[in-house]
Image (cartoon, rainbow, N blue to C red; front, side, top):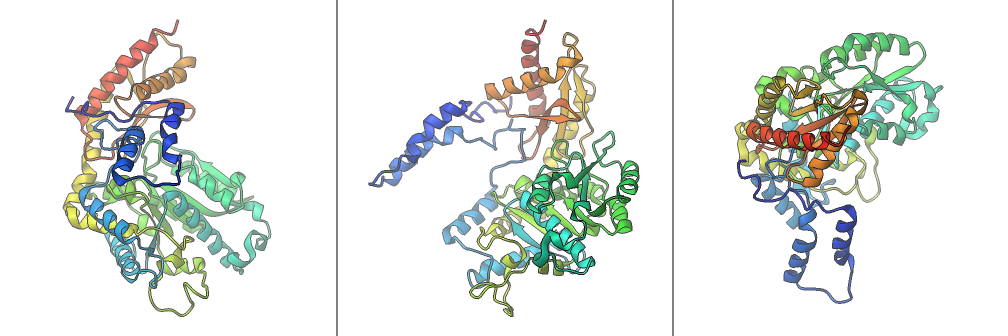
Length: 460
């Protein structure tokens, strides 16, 4: 089993048990305690309940522990506790972030004049992208959205966003925060491999544009449930035809565009008006580490807010905080920079390739397994499948998959995830870490099958 029983993934305690175990940590006293006693308490009370992302059978989410170079940068950032949004708060931090963004723009092949900003998460990056799209739309109609808001539009109820039905739920957060509401977010059909169906999209757009004003279309390069990559080039052409902003949510998948063999899958990302990315998902850098890129760097001007003590108008020094709302945020660029320097680009690419190779080998293994129903082909490092059963009627198969998942999680030997695809329940395995190996995936499947056999006996 390749030594994956050395330590548990987590304690497997119930929420109530975790709560009771952690209570002493918030029982604050007048007198302080020694560092040694504090360490012991945290080790005993908290650490058992933390998910061990470096476990070889952690296959549930987009998480990994910091790699060596990233850890060095994170410890340095913590030691100096730099605010990096303004030159006067951290000259080195502000400038390094600027240089890092410029280098990343080149690395991903974005056009000259592109720019970016570090953010707390992909959710916030998607929100800002939609805000900028709406601001851009307002400018086309001759007013400043920052000053007039939605009331500047003659018919704001007609403003809509289009995205894949498999797009991340943060888009719902975005339309809520913008005051548009979920009713202004329309979803697009997907093909057999969960990518936006371009032909169906054209028909949908032709129908919707008669009644609505489509100001933004979102493509996803690495959907959350299946890791599928939407075809960006034809979607960008549709955006151009109807004068809509194109946002690419690459929070999970964008990193894989750095792999030469995968680059063609991401063709067209340089055409997007905005692109979001989460280095903390595959690069082994600490959370938070997210970035929003813009094709036209000057579009960030729509975010600018000056004050009398910070971000003063006319200052020539770099102020990264002008490009996004937080006026205080961590020095995320440092751990990303030190990680890439330590690994080298060849090392980074090998790190990215390893889990993709594992999932492809596992997919080929599943294809010939008579007990498995595959839900899609893996564009990236995610595979969704169902366990078959001749004894259980189709009406109960969703319940069967959920019970399998619950039992796997309760036993704690491995961590998988659960999703629904068009209301069909599926088991989901994610490979992010370079620890991911097809042999361990196969062993995990074997254990899942044993659990499924046991659960199957509960059905009449």
